[in-house]
Length: 352
Ligand SMILES: *Cc1c(COP(=O)(O)O)cnc(C)c1O
Image 1 (cartoon, rainbow, N blue to C red):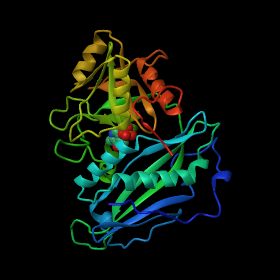
Image 2 (image 1 turned 135 degrees about the horizontal axis):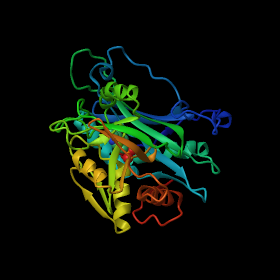
Image 3 (image 1 turned 180 degrees about the vertical axis):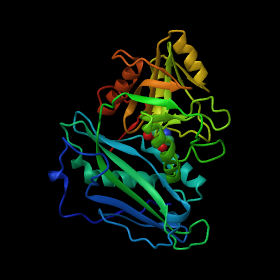
Image 4 (image 1 turned 45 degrees about the horizontal axis):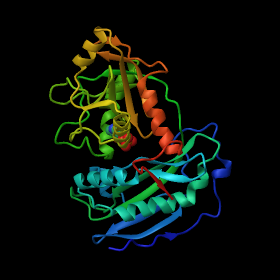
């Protein structure tokens, strides 16, 4: 099928010039345009880019009641030489379609998805300043719009892409707790899917942990509560001695693009990488033996989020977070590829 041309209706005025890059909260200011397309009679129709606007939705819209909503989170960067690229759109597209399939929502063709991102970034690229550490966060999402109160798979959907500036921030190290009571996802469920319900369901346990002085929860597997899964919107990684270890993918773990990129970079550097189950007992043993343990989350937002304190069964341990930690080398290596400072050997940067 041929990729449909995208109709473009430009906003006469940009909010960009009034935007304060030195002081803003992430996710509060949409850029000037968004992409829209509706699914009707088995086809994605009238792809267009329009001035940022609100939606009109029936109170019976199925997404509001039964949770058919799926999203992606990705970024566009401006390199040191001024060129703009989208980071690994094919990989995000694959995951988007896996999520859509699991939620009985219609897939989106790769060309259609990437074309929409490209056109939108072309229009919004002036939101990515040359001289500041700011990228353009892109949020593609699909939600069920069919007005019908009966529990059913919707026949109509909206596909939207909206953008917002995001600082390449240097995340504060976090204090986490290994959660052995609440569960984020069970095997066979939707943990591997970026669907809205997963995040709403995680709020309550996370809030309880925050009241106890933690920043985040590390989830454990639903069956035995012994093996680390992931944290918030990040995959977890451990450096034990000279080996990078991360839980292997399953139906309860999200296939992070950052996870995949960091694993590839570590392998390219000749590091030992293991994708396998890792129990909190193994971590405790390593701490108790006096070994250096690095523990960190990986995701699009922060790239790497170092853990400075982890509570396991009521006992606190301190992972290594000094400047010479391997995790920071991995982070710098990924940033260098994105900024065009080192060769992009895997063609991750999709230039527009
Ligand atoms: C989005 C997300 C991640 C990280 O994925 P990236 O593609 O690296 O941003 C990890 N875990 C969960 C639950 C997520 O929603």
